[in-house]
Length: 177
Ligand code: ATP
Ligand code: MG
Image 1 (cartoon, rainbow, N blue to C red):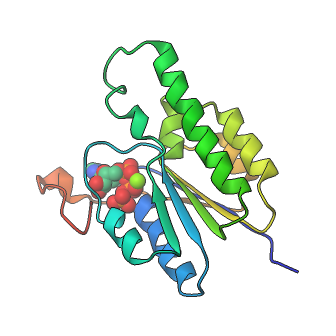
Image 2: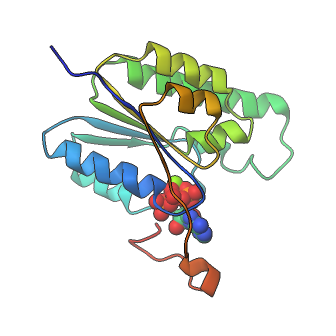
Image 3: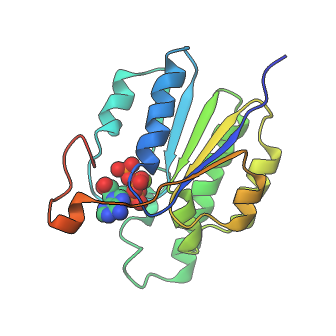
């Protein structure tokens, strides 16, 4: 019998949420587990993991489901435009989760997408409740909703004690992106 999959949340205002999820992915891939990371919010930046994932194929798949949100976050696009992209992101998310092809699925920055009102928390709650029982599901992003915390098995809050940004040090390649 397969083990129960966990619902894992990395939240809080300190750095390390996406990094923690990537670290777990690296660990799981060591056992030849299949990992899929869905990025809900990604701007025009290039992140190292976009290339690391290719080096870890076919065990690691990285998909920018929130690509369509880029460019519409800071403008006044019609509401339907936002809803269209959100619906598409949720559709891809469901497709991956219910494909039963993966051992670990990471919904990176999904909490942020919820806070921005791009995705309805109820859609994510439904996915958490219906997911394959042995799938480990990881959700990252600040300001996790209480309803998600209630359903989770593991919740870690990253707390900022110090961040180089505060002393004027810019984001660093390989550390921040
Ligand atoms: P990382 O991707 O480095 O693990 P994160 O997922 O915890 O960070 P996000 O809220 O996704 O943090 O923010 C992404 C970007 O903002 C990263 O470049 C990260 O270094 C930076 N960042 C995270 N926390 C802070 C902070 N407290 N102050 C300033 N910048 C931050
Ligand atoms: Mg992050």
